[in-house]
Amino acid sequence: MRRDDRAPKPDAPVYEGAERLQKVLAAAGVGSRRACEDLIFRRRVTVNGRVAQLGDKADPARDVIVVDGERLQADVRLVYVAMNKPRGVVTTMADEKGRTELADFIGARLEQRVYHVGRLDADSEGLLLLTNDGTLAHKLMHPSYEVLKTYLAEVAGPIPRNLSKRLTSGVELEDGPVKVDGFKLVDTLGKTAQVELTLHEGRKHIVRRLMAEVGHPVSRLIRTSIGPIKLGDLRTGRMRRLTNAEVAALFKAVGD
Image 1 (spheres, one colour):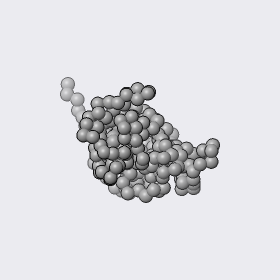
Image 2 (cartoon, helix red, strand yellow):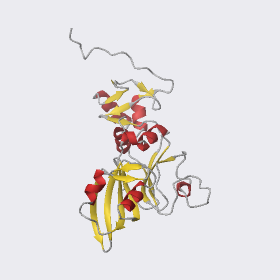
Image 3 (tube, one colour):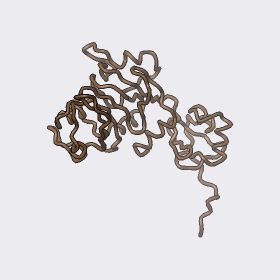
Image 4 (spheres, one colour):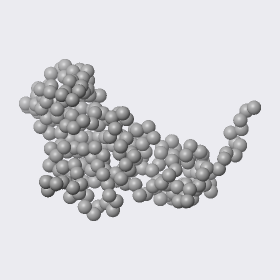
């Protein structure tokens, strides 16, 4: 017998912290409540895989809400921030040696306690993600999810033509082989060169060690992207909240 897709589906579970779905969507910045009601009416919203209906409720802390195919992080207690870490700042919230640390920049700008997603060594700069979403942070850092990171490096030149092939084929380091997912020469500046490397490795000082091993030590290193999140024109030492679309793209990058 052919299944009738229009037949009523079992009611979704409603948790104690559930609120009207349009209120949850509006609080997450999707739009006004009326606009969110229209999204629900047009069957563009699902909750835990079920097409939502007007009158449905959802718990932003527990339910998986998807709008137009993109997962929405509706829990307003969760924070997602991009920072342009300056050179000389250690990636920690409490440095035992009294060096300039992330907490010196965050200060009272964020009410929630956040943690850095991965690290940048003190001499490196660029994009750093901060969040209190431990589950997403773990997935972004774990090598099995292969989230790509892109770096702009100033290195000793000149760059031989076969360097790209060598790096993408793999280079043996003391703690095992490593290969980049992408490499290109950006510019040549006298005896130095600017190169772009993309890789999903997360080992300590991996870019510096890799380039030193192939004879082109790094003098300056800037991380320009983590997965779908770009550094863009964010000024050194500044932070910005990620947009709903950017957070959804991060979930997509780790398969959620």
